[in-house]
Length: 59
Image (cartoon, rainbow, N blue to C red; front, side, top):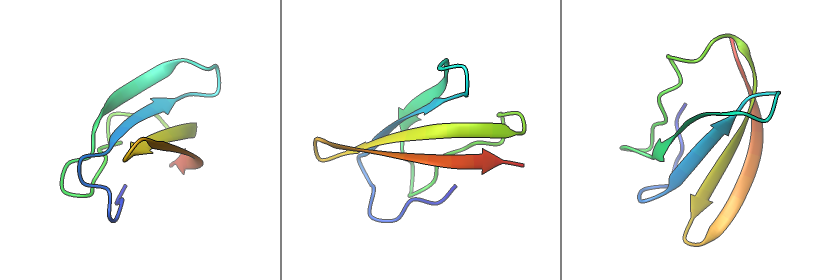
């Protein structure tokens, strides 16, 4: 998953059960999701003290 303008950003990925399945920092504008199973997820991205939440589907 590519995230532009998000160097020094941290993230959390949450599944549909509300469980955190991944967290870390954005590396070179990329969040690695290859280890996730196919499902719907919520991405919480924190950049410069502001949090953005987006849904995404891992196929």
